[in-house]
Image 1 (tube, helix red, strand yellow):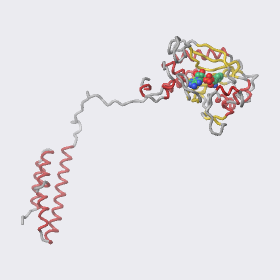
Image 2 (cartoon, rainbow, N blue to C red):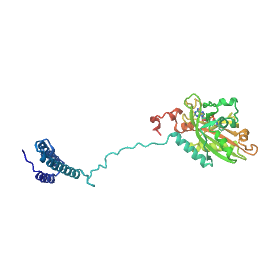
Image 3 (cartoon, helix red, strand yellow):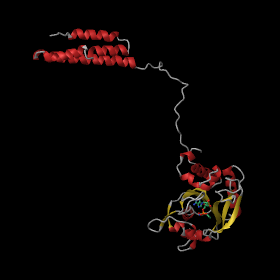
Image 4 (cartoon, rainbow, N blue to C red):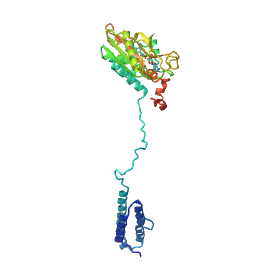
Length: 337
Ligand code: FA5
């Protein structure tokens, strides 16, 4: 039987490991011990022919040697594969990985800009709930039950028939005046909902910015000055504005405010329905019944309220010809801003 001297084998293994200069040499050492005809492999093949007494000791010693050589190879491999700091090659001219950054939605930019301008003019920002009850959305705004004016707003009623998705941010006026006494100067931006057919300038959800200014002598002239200032700052240029008499139950007198269509320069397009003007907001002097609903003396206080359609404002600013694009989630559209 072939005799194997494990001690000698260990010394030889140490020598060949010491002389290995790179990974290729190391691979050669590995194969010379663990390959098909490798020394350790062959030594294991001998075990089956050994007597019981010899087998136990030899097997144990052989396993120890096997582990020793494996560990030594691993150790040397770690040294060869270790990256030497400062010696790593880096191509500083290679193009970097482009991180795709998100950005604000054009409606968010519009809302923030509008808020900023009104804050600079001394208005306080107030919020209210998107789900309202009838009282705040209608009754307190001088629209009693069964009054035909309720038809002015196509409403999403909730199941109980009393709660609804607010059709405008005007209810925030009521919440605020219930808790605060005049003089006051607030804006209430927020999302509103209408159960109506969509087209280029109408959607079922959009943003309103309600404004309310009440004092002892606040007049329509103050409203015109404020709104003219707002438009000029928002668009960064003079914008033509016109007032048309209109009806809103919560104001008297009431008017509709149009701005010249910036999409077509007033020539007529699908956004302005070929009129050259775009209805951008409703407004008027607050109706005495609204003050009464909030326990405010209507003989002592007076002021104006308005409700701007922020989506339409954004359409004018960015020359967008369909309101529905804002809510389409289409990246080809959004990435243009
Ligand atoms: C109102 O909702 C009143 N609460 C505004 C108001 C406030 C009047 C205070 C007087 C005093 P109106 O329904 O017209 O008004 O809506 C206001 C603005 O919202 C419109 O001028 C328009 O710019 C925008 N708007 C109305 N309906 C839609 C719609 N379906 N999609 C997008 N914008 C709309």
